[in-house]
Structures are given as C-alpha cells and as structure tokens.
Image 1 (cartoon, each protein chain N blue to C red):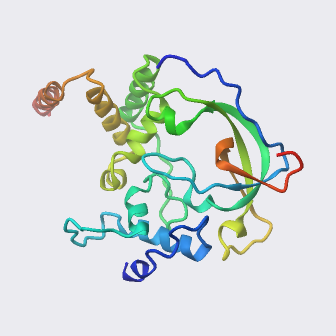
Image 2 (cartoon, rainbow over the protein chains, first blue to last red):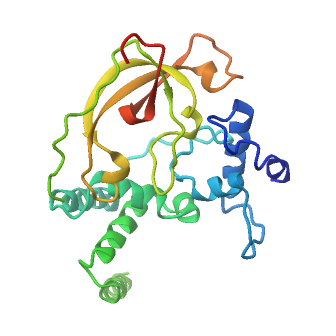
Image 3 (spheres, each protein chain N blue to C red):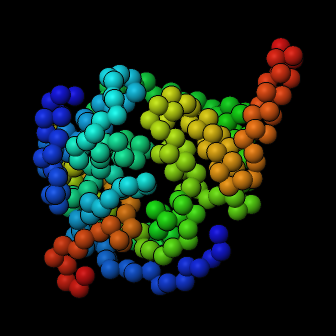
Amino acid sequence: MSKSMLAINRSWGKVMASRPELREQHELIGSIQPALHYPQNWTYATSHSMFKAYTHPLHDVGGQPDVPVYYEEKEEEDWELRTYVLCETLGWKGAWNAEERRRRADVDIGYTQYLGIPYYGRWLLAAARMLVDNKHIKVYELQQKIDEVRARYVKQQ
Amino acid sequence: MSSSSKNTPVCRFKVGDRVRIKDQSWLFYSRVQLYARGVEGTIARLNYTDLVAEDETFNVEGEIEQHYIVQFRQQDLWPEYAFPNDTLQSEYPDRWLEPLNNSQA
C-alpha cells in the first residue's frame, strides 16, 4: 500500500500509463479490497490515483494480482435458475435491460458485496433494488414480505 | 424505454486496421478494461451494432455504434508474458478506438 501511495500522482495528465504504472494502479485498486482494513477518516484530499481506485468499475478485475484459485464445475441450484428467469422476465416486461442489470449487480453494489455475495445473489439484490428505485415496490412492503416468508420457512423446518 | 435510436452507426475501421484503445473516463460505468487502455491492436472482426453501453446501462437509448473484435499481442498487454506469439481478443465499440496509420480511417 505505502509503496503504491508513493507513486500516486505519476500518471496524472498522461495520455496513457506505462505498464509499470498500470501495475501500480492495479495494485492500488486491489489494496482497497475490503479484506484489508485500515481506517479512513473523512479525508480532506485524495490523490488522483486513489480517486481512480475508488471510482473504478468493480467488474474490471482483469490484471489484478491474485493467487491461483480452485476452479469448480458446478450445476446451477434451483434458486439460481429461478433468479435467472425472474431477471430475464423483468427484462422482457421492460422493467430493465441486461446492461442495467450488469451495472447494478457488478458495479453499483460496492466492493464488499461484489466479492462476498454469490453471483446470482447479486442478480437478486440488483433486481430488488431496481424495483424499489423505480417505485414498482415499496421497501417496507418488501421487508415485510421477507419477514413473512422467513417465518413460514422457519415453521416448516 | 422508447426506441429513439435511428442513427446510422459510424464504422471507421475494417479488418486488419491498426487501432489504439482510448483511455476515457470510467466514471459510473465502463466496459473497457484498465489493462487494454492505451494499447495498440488490430481489428480482427466486425461484430454487431448495438447501443452505447454507458447510456443503455442507465436505461437511456442513445446512439447505435459498431462493435469490433480487436486482437492484441499478449506481450503488449503484459511485458513479462512468456510466449511472444500468443494473442488476446476482446470487444470494443467504434468510439473507444483511435486509428493508427490506416489508409482511409
């Protein structure tokens, strides 16, 4: 982190970053992943590189340093298929389009939720938020429904 | 959601043209990778025409634009990459491409 912070303003104003500068920007973006905790306290100023990192569209993960991860072949679960169908149906009905879904589920959701919530869980959250933002449903109505379904589910267990 | 996109898409490039990916603002939404910005490549294919994604994602039907497949040398993207003949292809709209020494671009 501190090494990247030393280079914070080097690429400001240039047409393109050099490859080493690109690596530094990737490392800076990676450093604000929520797993790394350092306190931030209503800063009065932020560097250009740090501003770029904060506003970087989360889904652009290509090039970020990482460790090898186990690739798992996995069938969709029932709730995942239902989520997919629900979101596509909302598209056919004109409630949103696929690009809006991507923005809401992959970018607007924020780093912590992007990395922490399963893929179709993010679709579902995005759909619910879209319905609320566009006043198709009321938040309190949604919250009551969630509590009602949860109570019914608990009873069945 | 009304359809207001009636422009004829700009199509400045043909297969084989050299281009550079522009480094434009990513504020609020972008589909163009950080690693590809400023890098030179070659038009490998003309893909479909589609809405400007940055507008469509906010539910605004703006311009229609030509999308292309651009081929890069892996070593142009990642200098430490070990295999000089390997390439990578990705998709970009016309607006994001800067022409490089082409005959009529």
